[in-house]
Amino acid sequence: MSDGMKDKAKAIGKKIKGEAKDQWGSATDDPQRKAEGKRDKAKGEAQDTIADAKNNNK
Image 1: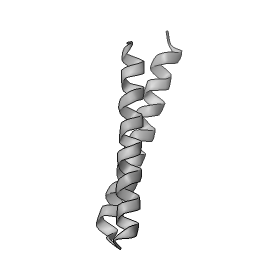
Image 2: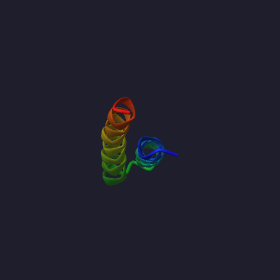
Image 3: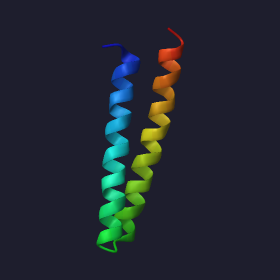
């Protein structure tokens, strides 16, 4: 598996983790957990963009 694909898999994991935290924060009315989820999703999106760039450069 190439580095770009590994990064892509990690990015997807972060986005899923972030979505879960976001939903949990909404369900439990926990604004801190919701914010953590949004932050994790944003990190995942950034990592996904980097992975795409790595894959496109090959």
